[in-house]
Picture 1 (cartoon, helix red, strand yellow):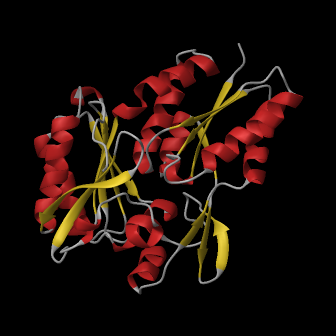
Picture 2: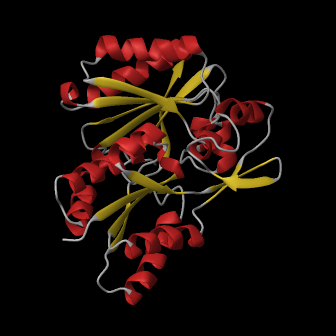
Amino acid sequence: MRPVRIYTDSCSDLSKDLREKYDIDYVRMKTIMNGKETDASLDWEYYSPKELYDYLRRGERVLTAQVPQAEFERAFNESVEQGCDAIYISCSDKQTASVHTGEMVAKTIMEKHPEAKILCVDSYAACMAEGLVAIKAAELRDKGLDAQAIADEIVRIRKQSNEFCTVHSLEYFKRAGRVKSSAAFFGNLLGVKPIVIADKNGYQTPLKKVKGRQTSINELVSLTKQAIVDPENQTVYIVHADCNEPDLNMLIETVRREIPCKDIHVSDMGPIIGGTTGPDSLAIFCWGKEVTFEAE
């Protein structure tokens, strides 16, 4: 059986420690700030989280672009040259066309190398919900499954990766065109903190509106508590967009108090997702019940 390499993309927000722990690589998307295009690095090589989010706070917009064809060619050819098969776990195709570009490149390379298998799997998610799916793929690889068996299992369970996010405003989502919602939801948002999830089809969509930051944090934990399955044997992931320390600590302590999870992992929201959700966003991710909610 051929070795398997696992790839994800800049939307996954997999921090360096997690990528190293699970031996996961990623293909890079692009960001444009101040007219300068750079790779959307998850290691903050070109700017810090504070620089990114302060830029957004000034009313500027970060432009983003999908994974370039050349980046897929680099990654997949590298796998083939090393005698490996490859699985790419992508951000939802409702958010980016990267998975389709990956499929096109994979097809071309496999025609030249029929011994290789390169599979592109839509996670139906973004941020660490996508990251969780990539981690699961890596765990299945480490159990000895081949590329096809890993992809089949990921397709079966991908809708069990749950995300719950609160943002200060849906304005950033609206600017980016990345949230599916009725016009009625966008109305009368003064003082309201939306709760955003990925629905069953992979759309980022508002689930409900609550009043105030503390209430929104409590709601994130409540929704996670309702959704999570077998919490004692899993890590709950918290990702934030340069949140202030009191809010972040409030979320961590509330999770610790309310959910008997094995561990809590905290990391920064990367430039692609953070540029869409905006500063001060907070999100929780876990494995749980299958997502059945569908955006209107």
